[in-house]
Length: 170
Ligand code: NI
Image (cartoon, rainbow, N blue to C red; front, side, top):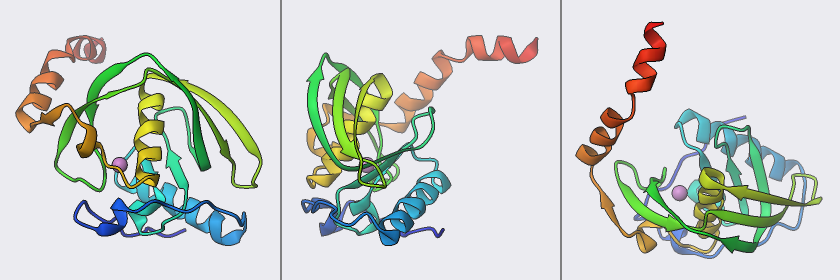
């Protein structure tokens, strides 16, 4: 496995539509392994192939429930709504408030080409929408409600952890 170079918001590759994967071979498996390693090395929860300069319909995610690989994903259904803070490894140092569906049903191929269906909600639903947008050449900054600045993030962090502190002291 190897780390891949992540491209940033100015790169025109991020604005292109990615092509479907047709060969489920060693080259794809290497790409998937490299993408997972790269995502983890940068503490990301998702990474799409265009972000490592490969215009193919491949995404990896880990929203705390283990690694999920999706090839040629297609959103089948969405419902509900959630609004929350989002970032992107290709847009370093920035965050935005983005409204997404609360529930998502997605069909995709695994690394062996087998079709799978997954129903997701909350963070994973957000992540699936964010990553599949990358395959269409869309970034969250295109659809965000507004920019979220660092001082707002710090305030949000300070408001939450009372419980966490209490648990740590016991
Ligand atoms: Ni992203």
